[in-house]
Image (cartoon, rainbow over all chains, first blue to last red):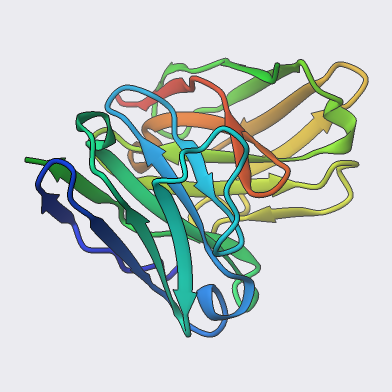
Length: 110
Length: 116
């Protein structure tokens, strides 16, 4: 099953802004929108946003998500050391009748 | 507080079977759809299967369709994944996840190793 496309890595300085992109198509990101998850090494994933822009309770406002066409984006402002993690996008694909994940992006905070 | 605990992982030979369980607590399990997601060592997340809140709708990823079966027992607050004809490429940590808004809450995972 075709997955979503994310950059393998992003590096930004402390307190700066990082953006992670997730490219899909009209059957997944462009149709149903995307969710974003954060995973620290050795821990299960944690939901950061869903349906493009919604943030679960308890998630910092420093995390914001958006979508433009078939591409979703996660923006993290005021980068902190604890933001260093792997970030994944996910979406329901109506043509595959399956969820698809991106390959993950490793964020390094310098 | 949502709590999901996976169990049933282990080492199995190629072609063998395992049944994973996910015990849920802290929420009305019968009202929520559930997922299985796996992660091979050093790799990314891979969705495996989904079951609706009442078990009436099930979906599978292509690599596991026909070999894995998802089910649930709402009277026991437990989700299952029956895995047959296991292959080396099925080696992974298997997570169960609650579906509310999306992949809302996750368990700690159980490791499945397929090796001869």
